[in-house]
Image 1: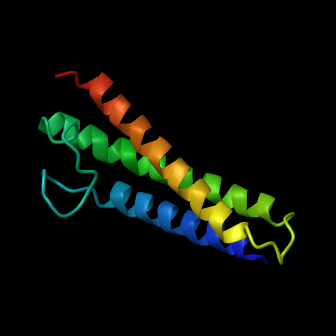
Image 2 (image 1 turned 30 degrees about the horizontal axis):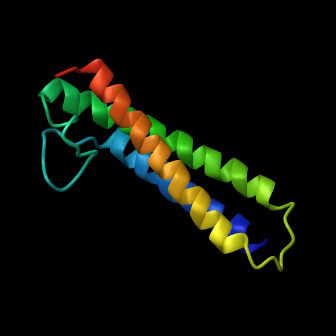
Length: 112
């Protein structure tokens, strides 16, 4: 197993687990410690509940995508110097894209 595969498996497991926890034990009310907390998600109790459920699903999907990426990463050479930087770039891009998608969905569902 190369570094990229390990990185994608680790990140995938973290996202799937975090999404499962958020789905199974959603925060009951708007709070500063736990849950998907943005201005859009805090605008109403309905928006908060929707954002928690939607973010949990998206985190789980992102985790699955990383595990699939880990399977694809098995085809890369194990000694490549660019595997960790590539993994980190993919991680950041995917995370930002998912956060933007969640925000747009919450704002579309609950316009101000």
